Length: 125
Length: 112
Image (cartoon, rainbow over all chains, first blue to last red; front, side, top):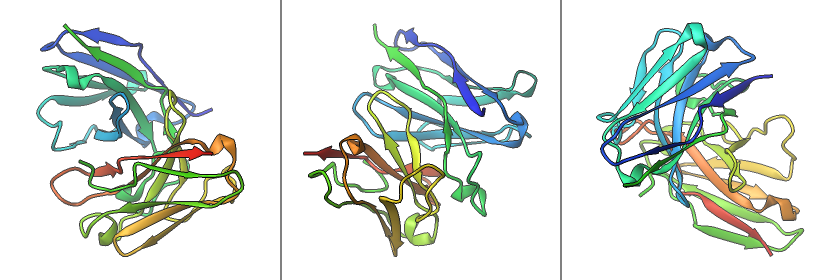
């Protein structure tokens, strides 16, 4: 079945960087855009950015574009998100997600219908 | 502060009907972009509940319905059940500089 498997929990010190992975299976990896969404403890979902897994084009939320880099490796069917200059407020669960079943007419109307299980990132001194 | 505004909490007794609002602006819902709704059980990933304003993914009961009008959208849940207790998020696209895919602040549904 279609699934996204994410890397394990991370603990980092302030100022460090982290690189998270998201491996797709059960579908043609390069045919679907991969989004990254985070959720701080008790807080709302926050969209961070996406990557076109086919051509590697990326779009970022203005809030994160200076510290976040999303890449992909089609040979590994994996997407990656690197976050630099980590702060305690970056402590959150980070999810990857795709639109697989319910495409919108246009890409901007795509819902996120397959989600990874999330990766907990803790930033603490 | 979220681009899409939801009430922090709603509640209802089993069997009742509740609605959750999602208010946006002319750069997102009002611009004609679709609204989607997600259900999140604490500790788990969100699950798509309603897409394209009114459509239900396969497996979602017809107790859940969505609507959209002007710059807002609503999620209605009828025949409330104990396992409907969860957090609910609306999501749309925003054409301003603030972000592209945007989520509401989330609404905690409590079944009394």
